[in-house]
Length: 337
Ligand code: DAH
Image 1 (cartoon, rainbow, N blue to C red):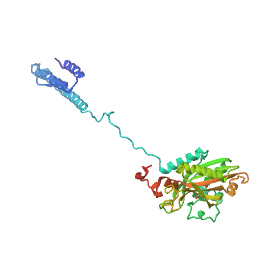
Image 2 (image 1 turned 135 degrees about the horizontal axis):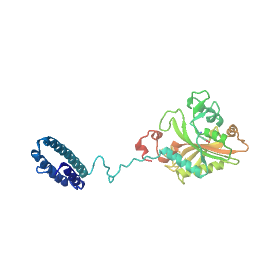
Image 3 (image 1 turned 90 degrees about the vertical axis):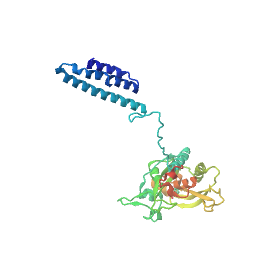
Image 4 (image 1 turned 180 degrees about the vertical axis):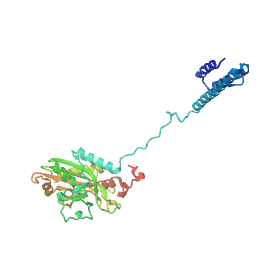
């Protein structure tokens, strides 16, 4: 048999090779002591002198290429047998579940409160965190000598026209009223800034939600009904509310709103400081001077406004006693919401 015939036979032998055992049989058939290659080699001495050398070289080349081919086949078989190969993906293996995050508790409260007011027909509006002195103070009837305008109580930015980090969300009242005519029913969630030292109840940055309604016949009764609906939706139907007279420059009359303590139900405990009541927000009827600043006729329009601290609502709702927990990004805390 000559080399070409043997090559053809090997190709067909390897084609339907089913196992490692079969591969071993092929090896013996060709490379074994009495195999076909050995037969070729043993025919060399009987060849004419001038053919021996070149035939011998051809047989050697053929033998080493066959060895390499069988080696490769064997490796492929072994890899298949082990089941896992660097180049294969086991689609039956369980996957690695990605860890899903969720919204921050403050964001959740903002969404919840906004949804309650949306139900009552309010629109959600946002404003910039860098404000003019006019929108943050003057337009809101806060006089120049008011302590909140002091540089120790507001972050001023060193610019030609006095800009500042808004100290409350109320300036969005000015923006919205200047750009829209009544009737208006708007809530404004957002960040506010004050140069306060951080402790359990203070932070240089916190969140507020402002709300206001303006139309031709808005009364204090509308304010009370709206806030009662809100407070019961957040804290439960069984709470009671009270309005305590207070002073804000941008509302007249003004009131602070309390709910009965959610822990002791009004009996008096450490959460409510033995008072039985928890303050939740400030409110009042929009001051005529505010209307004048935005170009509304105070004889034609009336309105109410309110503002609440989101962290405070969250502390009360979740029974937390330290505002810093909201800002430290400790997953052991955040994962509980
Ligand atoms: N802007 C007030 C503050 O930051 C909160 C507030 C009180 C807003 C009464 C109002 C309001 O709209 O009527 O303390």
